Image (cartoon, rainbow, N blue to C red; front, top):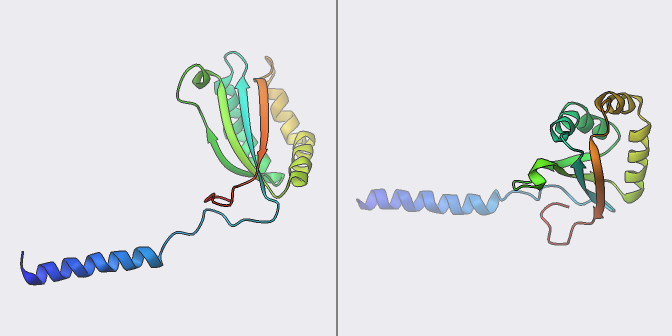
Length: 143
């Protein structure tokens, strides 16, 4: 390797280090006073996991957003038996009180009531629903 090539590689490396420090990504979201996260776990009734996913995909996320809930993420477990009947998701709310208001408005929403009724014509899609409200830690990248 020539001295010129080595020098150019050193410059490129140094530029990368400098850019990496200057252009470091910002945290995922800025903390707002009282913002809370809600972890929800749904256990689908027998044979209804695909129907539950369809309802979320086609309707629920949009209706959540309409009522002030922020969709953070949705997950399916990889391993059985949970992979066969479980949906896990996280929402963000401005506060616990805002979460209560959003959920109340969501449940009363005529569009949601229609979607729920139509999707549950053969019975409930969920057998169990669990909810945990959480605060981000001071070291959490997402706040």
